[in-house]
Amino acid sequence: MQRWLAETGRAAGSVFAGVFVAGLTALAVMVLFVSWIWSFAALFVVAGLSPIYDVLWITLIVANPWLLWWIFDRLGDVHRARFRRILREPIPDPPQVTFRDLVRLRNPFVPWRMPSTYRQFAYHVSGAVINGLGAVLMLTCGLAWLPVISDWWLSLSLVPLILGIPVVARGAVAADRAAGRALLGPTKAQQLSRRVDDLARSRAEVVAATDAERRRIERDLHDGPQQRLVSLAMNLGMARERLTDESPPLRAAIESAHEEALAALTELRQFVRELHPAVLNDRGLDAALSGIAARAPVPVRLTVDIPVRCSPTVEAIAYFVVSEALTNVAKHAQATRADVTVERVGDQLFVSVIDDGRGGARLSDGGGVDGGTGLRGLGRRAAAVDGTLAIQSPHGGPTAITVVLPCES
Amino acid sequence: MRVVIAEDSVLLRAGLTTLLTNAGFDVVAAVGDGAALLRAVEEHRPDAVVVDVRMPPTHTDEGIRAALVIRRQHPEVAVMVLSQYVEERYATDLLSTRTSGVGYLLKDRVAQVSDFLEALRRVIAGGTALDPEVIAQLLVRRPSDPLDRLTPRELEVLRLMAEGRSNSGVAEQLHISQSAVEKYVSSIFTKLDLAVADADHRRVLAVLRFIGVSAP
Image 1 (cartoon, rainbow over the protein chains, first blue to last red):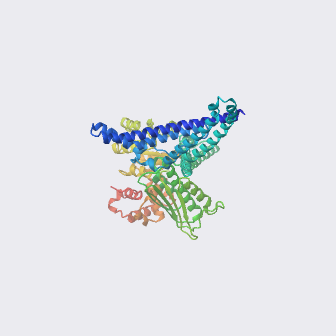
Image 2: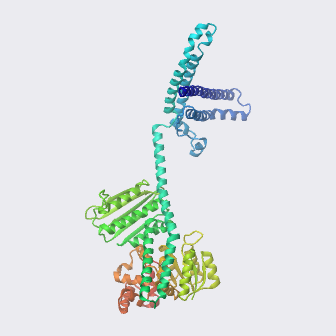
Image 3: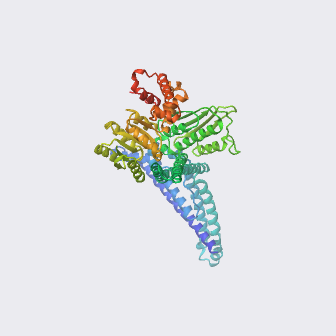
């Protein structure tokens, strides 16, 4: 019962608040309209009085539509606030522009190209009608007995009309809600496109964060364990140099410890390279790629043309594409040579790895056959920044892997 | 032999100092950044500097820039550059003026103590010491040129020459006789069109050609 009362109260409050805002809207329209007519009249009737006045009138005439648009936008905000506060109905803001946007876009007519301008206008009208009708009916229900208060029985018999108030309030609010949802917020298409924007942004953030994390781990490994391991191996090496006439078992132990430390160092370096090579950060793709090309087991011809560096995320993806592709070449292709080309054309980075092997590589789902998993991983990484990966690998070869990445992801 | 060490990691700086002192070098200064290195070189006039590439303040290529200044201003000082990774531009920058008295090794190599000391001594004696990875990487970018005429074995010999090894060093590495090495070397000179007249420079020119630096 209490809740029912509270809801009714809220509905009634919403209706009267809606009427109040509609009143403000009407007042604003009236003031603007009068000032517009007044400006025309003043301009033509008392023209030439003073150039200052003429300028003022012309400014008022010209600025009027923008003032109207701005006030409608703000009153739309007030309606949305009313929906949110009183009716607990959050309606997201439609795409809106500010005066600053008009200056930035160098196009003062943007507001009239936006559907939200007309939809808000439509709401101002329909909301005024709905809430106005609701308020009038509620007042009628509540106060119908007042004029006949002198006639006791008649006025008393009209009192039950009060029971109509909740019905009217709820009906008005339901209609208002429907109109508000349909006209005050963004359209379905706008909602979807906003959602797509949000998703694209959050995905890019996740990808960039993963990348940043890899870089951080690389730095930490370099500053910590790697230095210690070099130092350890160096000390063991020194011990090894000086222990020429010690007992053979001791020498053997130190020798093998030194070898182990060197092997650990090599493994760590390998690991760091696969994680995120420091050279990529410091010197860019060109330098980093010549490193993997040099370490590839088959001769690689490398051509890199990147006049302006891409974003770190894209550089990392391109790097790992080439790295993984060359690993595949070594493992599966039985190739004798490979060509790696990386070039930036406009905002896109083209990466291609071509080998003269036996072909037959594909993005298989069946595990590691033909290097499918590695290639699929590459496809996923490229797709994460809206890039594409294509493989052409007829049986008998050659195999060409082409990746196109947008540079600024 | 007097050496200045520039390395920003305290641990490695101490390690290198001990390593070189034990090996009979006189470590006259051990500093942590490029500016301090240049001051130390001015002050001590060492025979050699051992420089880390990544140092404060930017942690990118301070070491290389300091090394290039030293190469220009103090040609008598041998420069041994240690790097976390291979960047061929660093190598070509270092070698572009002269190929003598310069070394470029991956940092991990200092752990192979005897090899590292040998390389350092070679650099101080006016030779070169290039990391095998540096050379492999320089080869990738090599445009097609007379080097394509070399056989794989000759390329291997040339690669070892570029690392800074003498004929006997090459022979030892490849387990072949010194006369066989001499035969390869003269064949390399012929194929690279290096006339007998520049006998003294031929070796350096061949190496320069190999690593893609245009000889002066």
